[in-house]
Image 1 (spheres, rainbow, N blue to C red):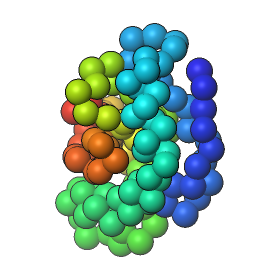
Image 2 (image 1 turned 120 degrees about the vertical axis):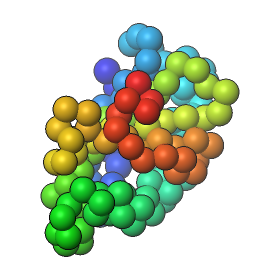
Image 3 (image 1 turned 90 degrees about the vertical axis):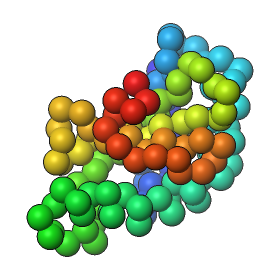
Image 4 (image 1 turned 135 degrees about the vertical axis):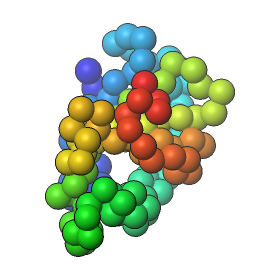
Length: 119
């Protein structure tokens, strides 16, 4: 598997890259990843929306340090690429079984939810 090192919400992390359907990325998957990396600021700006998402499960806990609730693990590249889609897959304190996914479509945050929304 390949990986990239990027700053995510203020921390430098190494993220593995998992293309759906195999070890090598299709041209469409590669383009989606390349474009998201070029517009990476959108990932860092997603922290505020992620904090709001986490707050609904937190019983009023302080959401200042998002890493206490969601830990980025890898980038998932779905096979079907009608739109440039990349998901940042995270462990999630409040749903350890399903985790949490931040789905970016055409370099814009489209949805936050359980990883099932993209798998």
